[in-house]
Length: 371
Image (cartoon, rainbow, N blue to C red; front, side):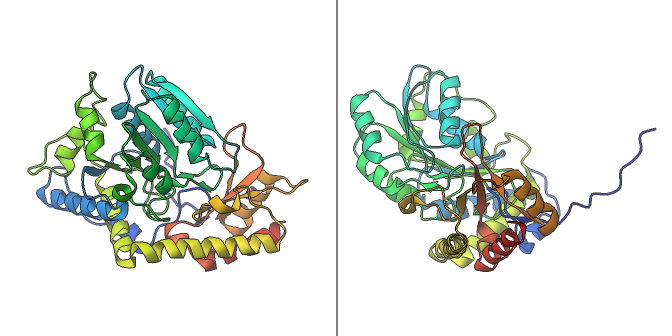
């Protein structure tokens, strides 16, 4: 007979890697509330509240806003599958792992990819993207990573959106590590499709992907020749999330929805501008401490991302051993480089509930002990 394992008792970790981040006690407690059925009218009211709160965080007053029943990569793939058809040209800014993932998924969908690349640690210049749009007037989509989690680089997205206004090309932005942590304005910046996740700056557990889709993008989707994947059909999902009575589409992850609802309530109570400032102040405390210890950052100074700091590993230091000792001896998780082409680095995230100067100090003290 198979031996029955004991109940779960995972260790307590301070999650300061590229995600997930720790959630607040209130968010954790929300997942212990009574489970409702996915077609319960009371849950339908909660879904509408989540949509309204997400609109506030994205600053998206029009179009479709909802949370997919999957992770951030599914938000990426859903957008590409809706906005591109085989043979369409897509211009993609690539300066790290997740820009390359956009290229990979778009290529699998049969799109023609024009990749504009920059070295790790540097933003893709908007001028190069705009020159590429001029050179490819048939391009259907420009896709960039607003917050490149693999390098700690923030793209100047507002400027790109302003420069693309009036052009017949859609703008897609990976906001996985920016939503709720740095300034973002989907409507004001002219973003047609934005996607994120729940486990980073929003401060909820992993498992859902909030997306925002503009009216212009919805017009493009309505004119498609081929159908979109059923599981992530945005029209069918909107009928469940926002149309009343709700139309059945899937069995929703109800406890994750509760957690997201509470996390978004915390964002609304704090206010977006104060929350962005808190992430910036925590990042500044971390970076000042790293500089005082002679550690160098990967991202160029003018495009450093607040929620995620990439640190170059000093010569002669075993990066993975440092991560292991931080985890075993101090209960702290930080990330390493992502992908075979990544330079040697540690990725330190101060996101959501963990975006505090006191957390930065704890990480720095632990690094002192290990290094």
